[in-house]
Structures are given as structure tokens and as C-alpha cells.
Length: 421
Ligand code: 5AD
Ligand code: SF4
Image 1 (cartoon, helix red, strand yellow):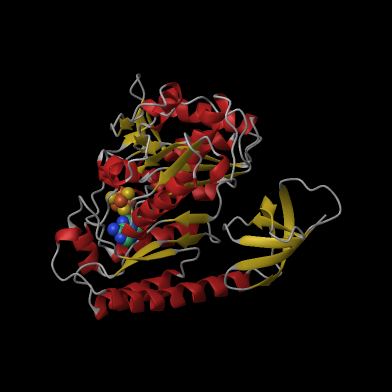
Image 2: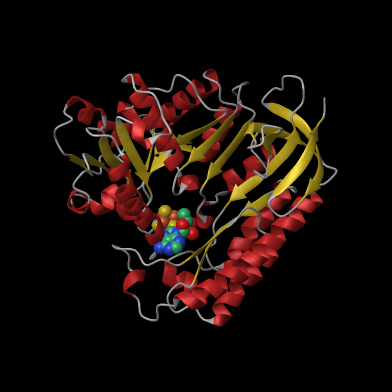
């Protein structure tokens, strides 16, 4: 979501005649697009601001947008007096106001819902992978999560608006569409005639676009994985055989405290149904270790589910107490030391899964999407249909963005391959 927001901010400022620079010292305007999901992310913002305020040139505008802006509000100006603007995740479309009135302090952390989507100019050039948000906010109140506070209640964008964005992305260079939402598979929009549209409808409509070859979506909430959505994995070959469906913990006791779906058998049944319609599908998850009151037995259950589902491409985090969340006030907070040990053990398991899956890909042929050059300039980086990185030698001829690649080698973090001409 933040990558998307960053792209829209860049496009908006380019319309105002600005160009991007990687050099803080050169910049006329410096924007930190921020995440508040864990304390570490928020702390990084403030330490970066400390560095930037000394490095920036005189008169350059400095500001933060996104969830830290929403969380800090006017306090941010007190902490960093050099800040010129503080704009929340639903109000960054107001950014041009600071260009018009550079001598003011601009604060807007309103929860204006979907307004920004109407205000932002349409992209005139799309990256190969176009992120398309289909909903804003989240109505699930996981007790550890700050997102319902920073991004507000859940709103699904009108079906027509999403499809317009998708068509625009296809016409301006996108090959892959990634639908975004905090609870993306809960997308529901009823139009003025009373017709209900779901994520499966968006996928079906998008798949009709000849320019679009790959479709995916993130992040899914387990109990919103409806049958129509499961079935479309068996019907729509453009939908990648890869699904991010976070479980967070393998312990029903902890899941209850997290206010998450706690029926592990029901979760496994969804994976089984997905495999029955798309036998080659792979699942990824996010995990939190060291949630308040998590004991060794709870943690063993997390390791167990990670082994059993054989998750690939997963993310694991130490629980981080956040303001405005219920879990931060719970008793039996877990020590940093225990969290670190558990995270290490979980990561060993997740790496093992990844290595095993990557190795199983050797000798396979996959159509992969070009991502960029590697640092040496001698290789090209592609993404497989499972979002693994695949590195190939740079050929001496022009390539197209989609290439059939034969996988020749693998380790835990990436694949090697050869382009099949
Ligand atoms: N502490 C640690 N991880 C968190 N996440 C969300 N809130 C917290 C928190 N307070 C993780 C969840 C979520 C991902 C985006 O971030 O795993 O799926
Ligand atoms: Fe946060 Fe995701 Fe839970 Fe929503 S579903 S509260 S975004 S972890």
C-alpha cells in the first residue's frame, strides 16, 4: 500500500513540474512516506527526520505522510520544528497546498475515506506491476494492530472506478495487476442498481484485458475466503498460483486474544479447497511471535502450522505494542529475549520451507516477469509466478517483459535460470 501511495505522490508532484532526486541535499521538497505498524518503523522515521533536517538545503520543504503522520498529528511539529507538513494516509492528495503556501504549516490527518482516489491525477505511465487499491481501511479489530486507527474503517471503492484504474494501468504499460486492501478478499461494492460486486468479479473483468497477463491480490483475511474466490483460482489462469493469507499464530488460544479467526481446522480446509482447484498453489503468511501471554506450547503450535502448510515467502515479526491497541494494555507481555529466540526459531522453519520449495523448482520452466537489472549490471532479475526472485545472465539481445525461463539452481532466497528463446 505504501509503495502505491509513494507512486501516486511522485506522479502528483511530477504534474507540478518537480523531478525526483535521490540526493537529500538537492531536494526542494522531502517527503517521508511512513508506516506505523511496528514501533521500529515509527522510530526510524524520527531518526531519519533528525538526519534530514541537518542535511537538507535552506528553504527546502520537509514533511511526513502516511500512518506515522496520522498517529503523531500536531505532535510531529513539536518533535521536529523544521517540519512543514504532516498528512495522513487519506489526505496526502492535499500535498500541492504546501507548494502554493510554503510558509504555512500544513496539517491534515482527516479520515476523508475514498476522497483521495477522486482527487489524485490518473497515472500517465504505469510500472510493469500496477498496484490498484480496491479498499481503504480495515474493520477487523485485531487487538495488536494500529491500522484500523491510522487508516480508518473499511471502505470498498466503486467497482467501476477500480476497473477504470485497471484499464488505465493496462493502457499505460502494466502487465501485472496487484489488487490491494488490508482485507482485500472482503471487497464488496453494491452499485446504484443494487448489484453486488466482489473481488472475484474484479479478477474476472481484469483478466479480459489482453495487456494484463498476471493478477494477484494482497492481503487476505482467512474467513473472507469465499467459495467464489476459491473457485476462480481454478478458472482463471492469469491469477497467479500464489496467495498471501496470514494466520499470525498457530495457537487458537492466542488467536482468540488477537481477536483473529481461531479455528485452525477451518483454515486448513480453505487451503485444501484451494489445492483441489489449483494443485500447484502456494500460500504465504505473516506471523507475530511473542504476543502477550504466548507460552512455549502456543509457539510450538505456530511452528507446527508453518511446517504443515509449508508456507513460502512469509513474513515474521516480534510483537510490538502499539498505541490505540488493546493488546498493548494486556498483562503478561513477553520479554524481548524470548521474542528474539522464538523469531529465530520460526525463521529457521520458514527458511527451510523456502529452500525446499525453491529447490523443487529446479528444472521447471516458468513464465516470469522482468523486474530490473541486478547491482552488477551483468544479470537480470525476474519474478516467478510465486514471486520468487529469479536471476538470469543478461542476454545480448532485447528481451520482452515476460520471458519463459528454465530454473537451473536455487537457494533459500532466490532462483537462477536461463531464458528460453
Ligand atoms: N506487532 C508486530 N507485528 C504486527 N503486525 C501488525 N501489527 C503488529 C504489531 N503490533 C504485522 C502482522 C500483519 C503485518 C502487516 O504486520 O503480521 O499481518
Ligand atoms: Fe490489522 Fe490486518 Fe487485522 Fe485489519 S485484518 S486489524 S489490517 S492485522
